[in-house]
Structure formats: C-alpha cells, structure tokens
Image (cartoon, rainbow over all chains, first blue to last red; front, side):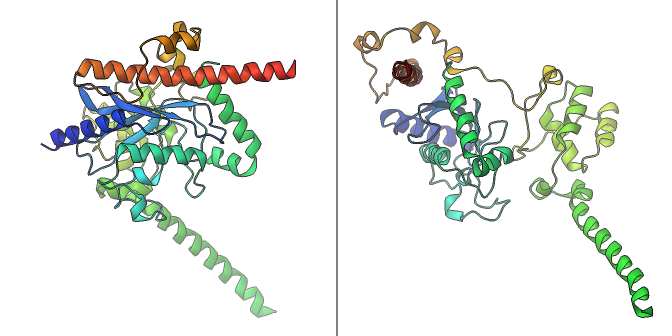
Length: 166
Length: 189
C-alpha cells in the first residue's frame, strides 16, 4: 500500500519535472518499471568552477517516500566538501527531521513530505556553488576549498572535462 | 618544599584517573552497541580496513551486511568471522542503515594504489554518444527538434523523450566546452 502511493507520488513528480523542467536539470526513473531508482543530470552552476559540466547522479527512494527522503549519489568524479568520496551527497534536505547527527541543521531545512525531487536537485545545484563548510563529508576537499582554493578549482575543472570525455 | 614533592604523585594519579575515565566514556557506546537498536549505534564507525579484510575472506557476503554486523558487535572482526564460519548467516541490516563509507566491493582494488574511489566512465561513453559528437550543431537542430517540455501518454515514448533530453543536455555541454577550447586556442596562437 505504502509502495503504491509512493510510486504514484514519484510518477506525479516525474511528470512535473518533464513538462516543466527547472533550468539545467533532467531527471526521471531509469526505467518506469521501477519508480524507486532515478537518474538525474545536473548542470554545473554558472560562475563556478563547475560551470559547463554535467554531473550524473543516482537517486534511490525508500518504499515509504515521501515520508522518508531518498539518498543521492553522484556517479561521476566529484570533488566537493559535501560529497563523500564514494559520491554520496550530504545536505540537510536529504536528512529526515528527527535524525540530525550533527545538531546544527534547522528542522525547516531538512526533509519533510512537502519537499520534492525538484527541490532536492535545486538544493544540490546551489550546494555545488556554495559548499557548506560546517559538516564536510570529504574532509580533504573541504580543507583544500578553505586553504588552497586555486587547487580545488583546478581539480573541479579537470573533472568537468573528464566527465564530458575531453 | 616537602608539600610540593607530596603533590606531584597526587597530580599524576589524578591525571591517570582522568585519562582512564575519558577513555572509558568514549569506548562505552561501541562496547554496548550489541544491545542498541539501529538508530542509536550511530556513534560507532566501522573501520573500512576490517570490512575489506572480511569481504576478502568471504567474498559471498555483501559489504553492507558485514558493516552491519561489525557495527553491532563493536567492530570485532573475530566475532563476525566466528559467526560466518559457524554457518550462521549475517543479519540483514534494516533499510535505514546507511554506512557513509560503503563502497562497492572491488576484488581488483588491492592492486590499484588508491582503492578509495571507483573509476567512472565519462558520459559520452556511458550514453554511447561517440557517434553523435561530431555531428555539427546545425544538423542536429534541423532534425525534429526535441521540445524542452516533453511528456507523452505513452510509456515507451516518455522513456525515449527522457533519453533524448539527457543526450541533448550532454552533447550541448560538450559542444560548448569544445567551442570554448577553440576560442582559447585561436587567442593564444
């Protein structure tokens, strides 16, 4: 029962994202036979070292979506303070309200059923532009972003080119 | 003078006791984590080296299951080994269990120097776009243009439209980057 209402909701979000896609975002289920696994492409925000890049990510939804948030994992090289080295994205909107291991996030920033895939992807896009230094998922990237911004930007630009096969 | 010499051993004893107390406090959560439900054992972090070790010993086990078992027994490799060898299957972790350092098991990772990140293929290879890269922009835009806003009542058509939108997005980004390179190289030459 929960699963069918979850896939109904996901289908509705898929339709919304297809008929009125936000700038720089393409997202949808890998196959409609399984609405719980999506692939998203996110464009690197302009005016940042991510500019010009396309970053693929996989979203996995729980069977009780939208009560619980999906998990999101980049499936490309990505060097960013808030992305674990294995690609898993760590931002507040992906954390359920009752589960705040770091005790610094506002409840309103975290996941709730009124959020959506679109909001997640837009948040991730702005996370690319403005890393959150408070809870680094990739400590090395965070330190480099703080102390050696030039090197950080060079790695990011290299990854942009690598991702597009250049 | 004599008071001072008396105080030094006392200070030392105090320091040792404080140190032991702090150690005891910090090791407590992992020691008793066997009885804690899933949500509460979060503080303990499984050592990835232990997971590597176990998954090499038992390649049939999933890393997630190994992590869950280690998490529950406080990171004791011997206990987990014992459990597997005695024929008892590892418990299936609850879906809420999301180890942050879970990475796909990769048997060849031992030979590579940094086994941390899996190698990713670029988008052109992944989507088989090599043949479409060199089509000039005009040619592809004269095709029936992919509308940016696309939704169809038919399931297969929807899938195709989504696929097209993905490809277009990647190819457009690639063309833009190539164009930028060209401008740069003409500027420098």
